[in-house]
Image 1 (cartoon, rainbow, N blue to C red):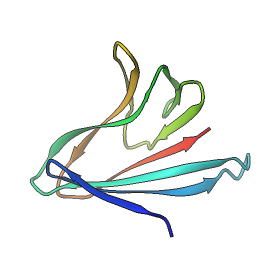
Image 2: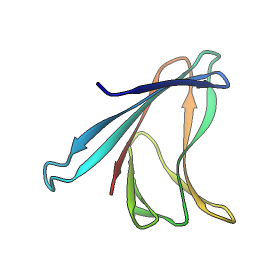
Image 3: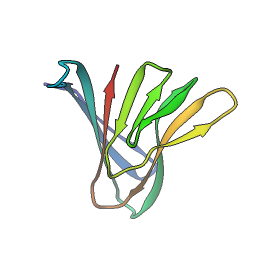
Image 4: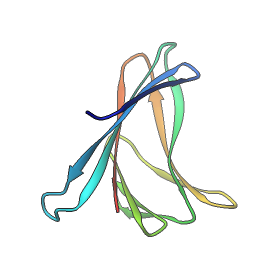
Length: 110
């Protein structure tokens, strides 16, 4: 059984859990993280910070490389954006959350 994390911020309710996976082509392990969000008060613009690192680069259309070590793949329903800050870079994913459940799926590999 896997742990599931349930939390709220502002009026957004989040269910957050992961599943450990194995790439069938390379036999390499990775983690699939699934976040389910909804807002009881209607549409809310949310920015999800998926990563912070010294360097974040696009690896391909939907993947990002953090600190030359961690690869994060964002599901095709969402778009990640790299934001430069003075001391780090952030990978942010904008979300429109309303009373209907929305899922964000991220895959982490190293």
